[in-house]
Length: 317
Image 1 (cartoon, rainbow, N blue to C red):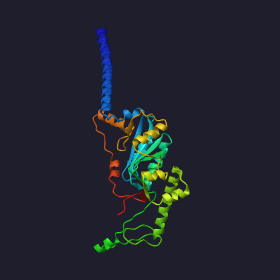
Image 2: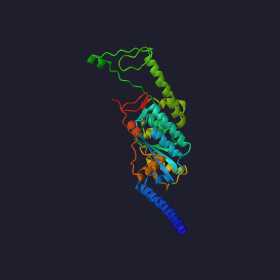
Image 3: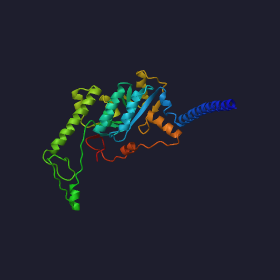
Image 4: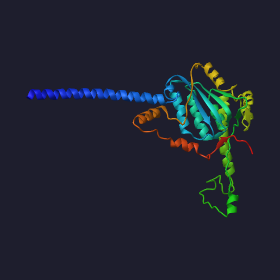
């Protein structure tokens, strides 16, 4: 009787182990199917396609501010072996000098690992042109607006409006130049000189970038860096760009650098998650959770004011 009872216990344990094994197999198969479904739900240019050799397309559009997401995306493109070449599609009037500097430096890091070409659309001016100069080759349309090499600092003065409204603003400052430029009064002695020195220092830095990257002489950069804008045709004559055309001309240059013509162009979006985040989102979907929104991207896109020195081209009034 005791032996029969012991045999039952052994049989039950064997059965339990078999059930545990097949449950584990079933769970692995189910997870594999769910991951396959997540991959299938991605657009053609999603992270599945990005794992295969391709040409990455990055966009720099609108007013340029400090954009950590775009800088991180540029760095990720540089670290991705499947990316064989990069097209930087630019359509921007410029923006903050600090924002342009951060993206320019990211483009230079990228160009150290991959062939990078800038393709300017309607606008590639000021800080946007600075970013374009970080690539190895610049293409623009014949009627593109290019250039505006310069820096500007603009501050509104509402003292007249406040006076009309009967509002008086008083300031107690540690030194005369603290808080300058002020929106509520005339510049104190030395304030305009201080601000002009800042502008000229950034201007010299900007000119130095263009002079070095475009192989210009001191005389040439002095003539070009007066804030003027040029059409693509004029910019070609002045060595600010390398060729006229669109994306097909950019692809031709990449081909000359050894990038196969057969590779697809896949757009990488700064609003999309990085590859690591995509895997996290895939598992979140499997577990029944949705991807979270990127508050930082929305905050950047909703910014209405530019802080600090700017290098931005705009039509005069």
